[in-house]
Image (cartoon, rainbow, N blue to C red):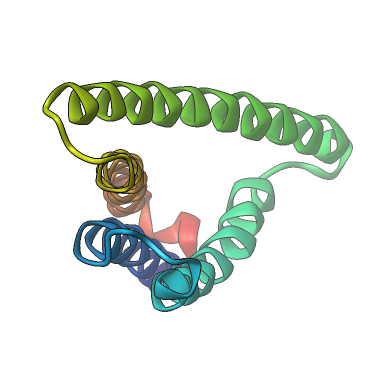
Length: 140
């Protein structure tokens, strides 16, 4: 399971970075240009999330599984909210900077998207780093 978790995180991060690079190369960005990046991201997330949730909840005693599951859901929601807020702040800051630099609207938005996607890639690499710290017995 550990290898699947790490592969999933690496593939998801690659998908984020491919999305960022695509935005910069394919400006003005068309949705279909992101298909390869989104396929990578979706594959990585699919390989990562289910085994990760199983790993997190696998060590919980039966009497506490309901509470642990509820806490996990809450932490996911809060983490997601913070992640979206950070990506949004970064997107807006880069967009403002690109506009101030005189870039056209499409190019400015492409730069902002690339920054937000790059942040997602870095965050996913942080997850990969944490997976390396996970005791081997914890991840199968």
